[in-house]
Image (tube, rainbow, N blue to C red):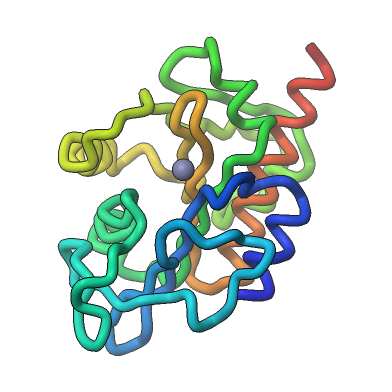
Length: 190
Ligand SMILES: [Zn+2]
């Protein structure tokens, strides 16, 4: 996972210490990336444990988790099969949603099949777009209210970035890359 985070940094997806990542053990313990770490040097020791409300627990009590930790906790609560959540500040999804409505849709792209559950390029996939906010309690509520809209295991915060998740690191990374690629195609077309 640390290796993946460093690789995503090389793509330019986590500038200036931004973004955050998490995984959940089979026993339910959530591990989330520590705040303020330069992602080009991210190590496995930069993860801390948090409780389901996003507060550091165990040996990490007192350590400040990322400000967006609650987003991770809500996704794990909504989708119990989720094991890994990746967050990106990649440019294309941000540009694609800077002015769009509350959803961004793709149709006819082969790579749509990168989203688990999509078996053909012929369908239409929709990714929810939410307003960026610093109020994580309110945003957690927004996620709960929109729980039925996450067919593509991802969403975009306007002018902020992408969250994507999966039942494994492999799957979460595939979802994140799929969405970024589709946004990039759309951008090139326009
Ligand atoms: Zn962010």
